[in-house]
Image 1 (cartoon, rainbow, N blue to C red):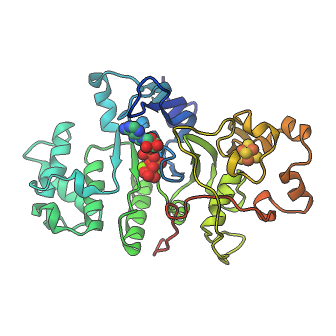
Image 2: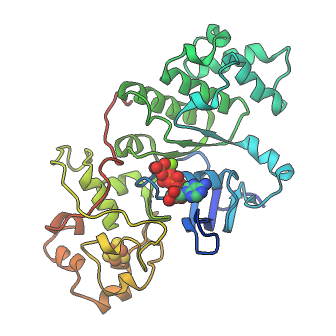
Image 3: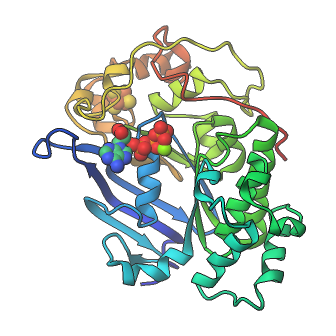
Length: 370
Ligand SMILES: Nc1ncnc2c1ncn2[C@@H]1O[C@H](COP(=O)(O)OP(=O)(O)OP(=O)(O)O)[C@@H](O)[C@H]1O
Ligand code: SF4
Ligand SMILES: [Mg+2]
């Protein structure tokens, strides 16, 4: 099946990943990914944001076929790849690559970086020993490194240069889709901006599709076309980035943006950091209904009982919250969102209550972004 109808290169349909508990395999496991529906369109950069442990890496790796789903479907280019045997998976592996937070741990310290990049080409038949050198040189140039560096070992490079090498190695197999899992989190701010700009340029030049996982709302805002917000295994909001940052609808998204203010189009002024209360619940024992309800100042009767579906409330803007379900709202007219609206505020703007997040995990940085 081709993907031309939906425009999606990568798709998840009711995708779940459960990990067993360490001590007892008989008790229900951790639902690291909980029935997620997601489409990543060809040529877009989708940002994926959420607190530590919410399942971002698990989702990214499952989309790449590195983790077997417990339920649901993963499609790549329209083909179902979720549970393929390794032999049948091999052609797809070339088309999808991953860039890690720490490229050093994934580079062989005893191999010159030119050899590492060439090796990726050999495995997928993109080069032979005789023609690899100019191709490696081209790739190094593409990622902003001097081709003369091909003979050096990984320890001779800085963190930012090593991340460029990691990106060059991913590009060596001519992928269509690259999942970047916290690719700039370990780098200095100025270097972060350079790597983000590089990824942006590569998308423009090569038409690549990216999933960009990060804690950093400023970086995600800069690089992404659309942004997905994840909470305890579920996507709670997904929309074009302008909508997420300027008109967030889900109370959790609003809390994240309040906790870590970033400049928005409507307000360039940064408000003071608000202190949030409460803790992220354990993924071993997530709250019923909407997982966010114990921390949500707008929670009302259905929230603890029923999981809100992810529904499209404006073109391309999806949110999983009972506040945006017409029947639920008319059944419970007095909830906080309605009173906030009566006062001409969005729910996040009006209340004295503030929600909890883990401020240590959600960070704001600025750099020289283009
Ligand atoms: N191999 C595994 N075995 C058991 N549990 C796991 C495994 N990998 C992840 N988990 C659990 O699944 C949940 C989601 O983990 P994941 O690493 O995907 O989160 P994350 O959002 O990427 O976090 P971080 O921002 O810290 O990288 C966590 O509760 C984690 O402890
Ligand atoms: S209003 Fe209810 S459904 Fe919406 S985020 Fe709050 S608890 Fe969840
Ligand atoms: Mg992670």
